[in-house]
Length: 141
Picture 1 (cartoon, helix red, strand yellow):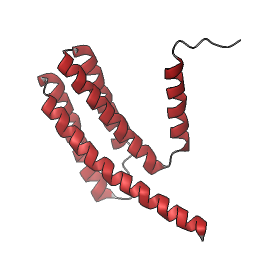
Picture 2: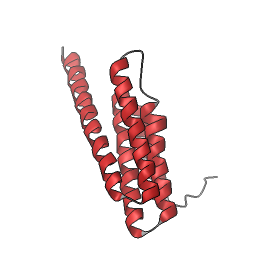
Picture 3: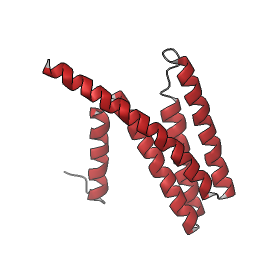
Picture 4: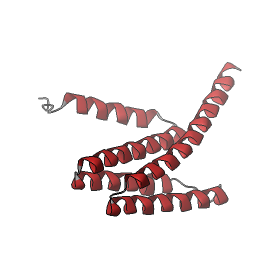
């Protein structure tokens, strides 16, 4: 009748993530993408230090996919073409740096890209905070 759960914690986390995605605003989704990329880079650095080459490669590939298929794909060149072009170039740079980190086994490059992602994430978190404040004020009026 019910499928057995091999890992209830993993199932719970997946449901929590899916629920979070379903309920998130577009700005919050961008912040979640940054979180995912940062988590993948941290994982890659851990695997790099432990000498686990396949896992390092998978984590870096995951970070690149998030940047490419998530962050870059969300750029709207019609609305903010100048900003979108600059972000596109920065995302391209990050993807290339992550490939170099993988090939050269350089944790410093991973930290460089993580620092760039953290700066951008911080800006998006501020936008999310401002948007929430505006929405709250509209609801109070």
